[in-house]
Structure formats: C-alpha cells, structure tokens
Image (cartoon, rainbow, N blue to C red; front, side, top):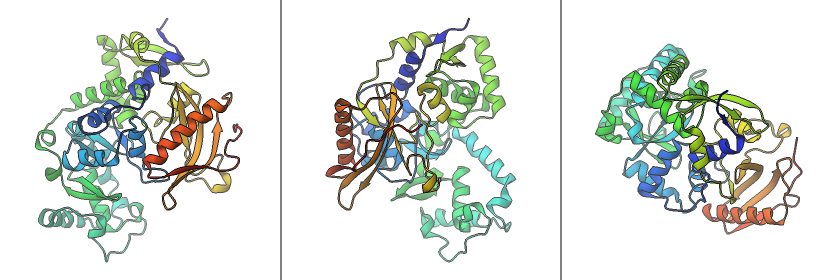
Length: 402
C-alpha cells in the first residue's frame, strides 16, 4: 500500500508552501519581499484592475504591509526580479534567468514554425530595425514605435508590426522588460536589464530539467508528472516523465496517494518525508482573506477542485447574461477552506470599495462572526486600494449557487 496523505494534511502542506497558512503580517519590501516571491515561485501579472492588479493582490494577501512601490523597486532598480512567461506573464526571481535560456530557445523554435502567424506578410525586417533602434536610442514602449503602422490582418493578435517584433524579441530573450509605464511594458536590450552574473549563467538541459521538477515538487508539496511539467511550463511531457522515473529509482521521490476533498484518491509523487513535512506544517490561520483569481495556489483549477472541493472559473469572457457569478469574482479563504467567492470593485473616483455579492459555499454558515471577519478584510482591501469606505449593496449576501 502507498503512503496516504490525508486531505487535511495535504491542504495544510499546500497552503504552507504557498505562504497562505501564516497570518499576513511581517515585512514586505526589499529582501523580505524577494524571499516571499522566491518561496511562492512566481507572481502572475494581469491587467485587470477591478480591485487591484493580480500581482499586487497576490502579495498583499500574504503581507498586509505590502506596497506596490516595493515591487517596482525590486524589479526596476535592484534587478532582483525579472518578467517573463511561465504559464502566463509572471514576475520571477532573477537568479532563475539562466534556466530561462532554454525557454528562450524553445520559444524561438516554436515561433519560427509559426512564422506566418506572427508575420503574415512574411516580412520580419522589423526585428532588426527594432533592435537597432533600441541599441541606439534606448528603451521603448509600443507607443514609441510604429505610430503610423497599419495593424496586420490575421497576424498575431492583430498587432502592429513593431508590437509583434517587440514581443518576438522579448519572448526569445533578446529584449527584456526594464519596467512598466502604468501597465505598458518598457523594452530594452537584455544586457542592460539582467545583471551579468544571472544573464551569463548557463545550464544544460539535464540541469534545467532537474531544477524545474525539483523546485515544482517542493513548491507544490506533491504532484504528478503533468503537474510538475505545468508548474513552470518549461518542459516537454517526456522530459518530466523521464525525470520522475530516474528520481523514483534513486529514492529522491516516492509515490503516494493524496486524499481529495470528497474522499477520492489520486496518485502523486513527493519527497520521502512528505508525511512528516505535512505533520510539521503549521495549522492555517483562521483569519479570512480574499485571493486573486490568479493566485499561484489557485492557478491549477483542477487541483483546487480536487484539494478544496472548490470549482472556480473566471467569467470575464462569458456573456453577462450567462454568468453564474460575475465578471471577476474573488475566492475567499478561511483557515484551510475556500468558503465562498465575492464580487467587489474599487471605485477610486468616490474612494469606495463596493461589494455587489458574496456567495458562501454549500454548508458554510455565514453568521455574525464570519460577517465581522469579512468586513475587517474588506476594510483592509479598501485601505490598500486608496478607498475610504466599504459599501455593501442591498442583498449582497447570497444563497450558494449549485
């Protein structure tokens, strides 16, 4: 029989690895913030600003002393972080840049195979033009180049040719994001952005594969081969499977069963001392906290449903009449349970955080105690988003939808 990681133990370990077990207190700038991002792996970047942008929400939900300026300093002045792709655009510790050399090469190969989609007219001359311009004149945004260009028809996202060139050069590692103007990327030569010790560090494929799998396993606590590969989205399926086979043979990992929220069991891989790690993980705080839909702990929707029994999908692209909950609804965590979801928005013109609706999960009783905890959390979010008050819409506390 395989060792069994019970559902409570699995949740406790998983939340601890994602810095969601402890109270959201402590320092959140400088090295402390860099260490936090290293601990949770990455911070996804997203443009939706209903309350705050995803990267800021992810960090504030873990450290209520966090201020967006602290992240900007680490990225743009200290160069302790860099921005690139995992499963989506993300902020990463800069010491990982050496591993991203393989990502750049693979992106270049894939993009060349789809050259006709990126440059439907076959003209990729903008690549050299943009590089020369940045080399001679310094960093640019998409607003700085191609002002008189016509958008392509059927090209990559129907971008202007200069925008396509900038993204191509960034994704293949020739350019880097030196900062953002608002939410607009500022592109510069990689050698001007990434410190030389990290830019020149090279790893062979075996080293990168071992790093990708071991770090994914340590950040997740337990995972199958598909989850290991998907964590950084840097490996091919056969590479992750080969690593698992070797690691099992050497005793570096073992196979276990993990219990889901409904008692179902799933085979996963973990460190040999995973049961001890789970037993030693702290009990999650009973403090209630609101999470970004793009939180690293929620990125894998299937894993969230398996571990927590919480089904969640973003309805941004669902027609309003067909939405079950709302445009952009935030999961709510209490201790080791996802107890509901909330539809809220910061209206900065009148400095009010407005709550349209809260849906408790089935079996979650929302009495005066939980309402007080939610109101306290909403007050913290209001302050973070420069709002002076919280306004609860009439009928905001809803019945669970099933």
